[in-house]
Length: 79
Image: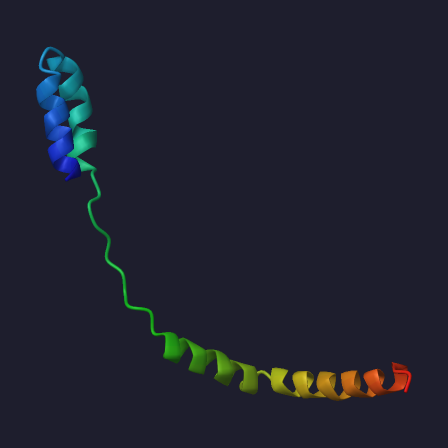
């Protein structure tokens, strides 16, 4: 679609041959119409993040933080 618009623009500006010759390599040769991408593997990324969470020891820091937070909550409440 963009190539058609560029061609229409070039046909309208017929009086400026030198300008079109100067600009046309950038308009047609360097025009990016599509990109390639890979499908995101959401479940695989979640599994990899969970495995990293376990292997790096962050699970222990999380559990210790829960216990200390529960103790702190119990000591600071009025009741």
